[in-house]
Length: 385
Image (cartoon, rainbow, N blue to C red):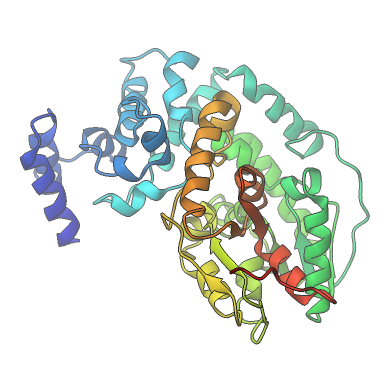
């Protein structure tokens, strides 16, 4: 990656604020070996300009390299392992936007996760997380006790995810209706959480337990295809589970992936919309253009690009919204402003993003919800002047 290397060298050369410049140049040139967390800690924060937490909050300790430095100091025993020192590490949305601007393509969330896991193993846990772990352990649902449902059978299994089941059940019903309108035989089961909240918070043993149970439940359903509305579920099933030796036999698609080639010829009138890319879909699953391409294929709508193509809704990563809800809302407000620059309706592909971003004059629709509206009898799209 010569372009990235040159950019980093140039930035180090022009900065008089960086004490680690010479050392990181030695790392880049191969004259000094260092593990990935050390490299990130030495970095002059090249991805800071893109980090939603840094943009909104501006603290050095919660900047990407700042988090890496704190994690390094804890790992090396130079800082005590306590919740006060761990707090900067949990001010990470796990959005992975940092990886786009890193010469090593590091994910800060991945680099600092081992320190979180060590903290959980040693019982150093924020009180705000204990209820989450208890709900996941006892009920398999981050929200707590859930209504039991009968398992269906068929070819296509629709996984709603915790947010839809508990906060947006109507979105789940619309998605099922949409899939059936498009000719698919689809069914649901008594699903449980994919385990992503435990994974993000550092409880790796609980994550693996939930993953194993979830995989067994999905595999015995007999489905050939799994479709989910939650990007985190799709990411867990396709990326995290195999990485921990857990296999889901059916092919797994996010709803936007599944529908991309199945809505040709759909008409949207003269509807003016923008779009919000969920982080796990765009970066975790490598689908940065998917939502835009899907919407571009709908006849008649006027599609406006958002102020920033990638920017977290503020509620990713499981921790920021629990430890600092004010910061999470400030990040969401920043994203709303970006989305409202060209439209007053935003289409996303994540139930959590829909919840986080709605309000203040911005209407937010899930992609399945939007397509459901376009296929509804007697639906007349709102005409924009």
